[in-house]
Image (cartoon, rainbow, N blue to C red; front, side):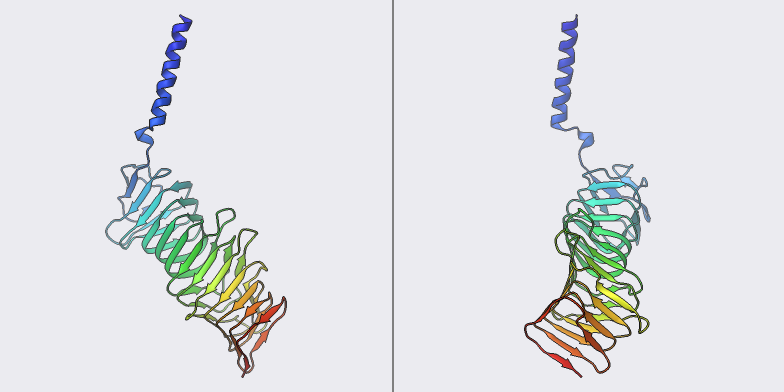
Length: 310
């Protein structure tokens, strides 16, 4: 009797293993489609899986009208996410990782949590008031409104964000380009007045870099009073590459702490621009009457271009 029972048990185990090897249809990745209006990801307005997307699924948000779907809790890795029409997508908490493509024809808003994009992604607009955009992928953004938050996350790969249109940085708050992230400003940028800093920190994970593209202007509006200092870099291991025109205006001091490399033009129209982390320049520096260009630290190499005091 024991031999017969052992034989039955062996056959059951073998059958179960064979079924697992072929894959169980109920566990296969599917395409989950949002069927609601404005609401939360963890709700039940999904089809065919009413409990919401599962690991490895493809996700589609494409309903009529202007709606916002918000991811707010939990940790999930999906294969892809497509947001179409006038629908926006937000992350306020939790961790959502996308292995392949993420696309959004409207706005993507981060105020908390982490959105990890590891494939090739596109967004019409990105608004950050907190949270983290990370992942090893490339993200192309039409416009950027950067209030606060992080680009880059410890251990998640550097990744690249390229802004093709206008970018704005809130000078009253802090923005962080961290852990090997590259931010390409290809459509011009404005940094409003305030004492908030743009921190660029590599942390031994590649080189965190901000690139100001040729033919564009980065406008630094300075601080709100003459005695204040804000930082463009704030760490010695970050890099700013200026191939465009960097315009420093307003009050107070802007100080760089990592390398500031200039192949374009720097115009110090008011206040102080202090290059304190070294770098190189083959471009031009122009300093208006009453303004100050400083070199407070590091080694700065002038390999060409001009330095003009007006």
